Length: 122
Image 1 (cartoon, rainbow, N blue to C red):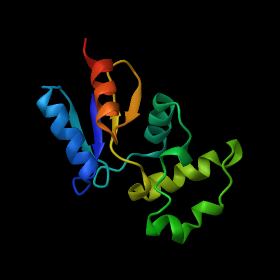
Image 2: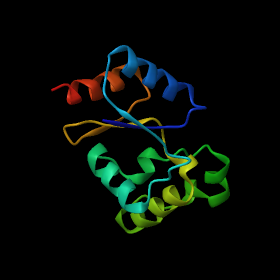
Image 3: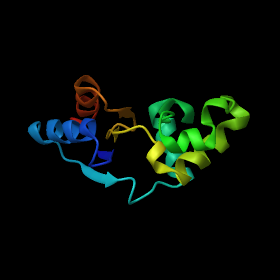
Image 4: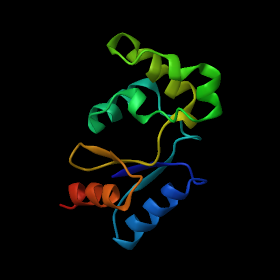
C-alpha cells in the first residue's frame, strides 16, 4: 500500500495516523517532492476509476492561473489534464491511497481510508 501525501495537509496527516493506529504496512510518497509522471498519474486514475478532472484541486491558485475551470472535461482533453497534474502536482487531490488489490481511493475521509485498509488486508 502506498499513500501520496502533502505533510502540510490535515487530511493527509489524519489518514497516516489512522494507518498507523491500524498497524498497516505502507509507504509514504510526498508527491510534491517525488512528483508522479504522466504514466503514474494515468495508472492511479485507472486504479481509482476516475478521470483527471475528478482528482484536480480546481480551487488552487495554479488552477486559476491555468484556467482549468474552462477546460473541457472529455476524452480529447484527458492528456492535457494529466500533463497539468504532472506539471503542477499541487493540483492533485490528496491523499491518494493505492491498495494491495490494485485499486485506489482518495482518502479524504476515515471511511475511505478504512476502505483502502480493507482492500489491503490479506
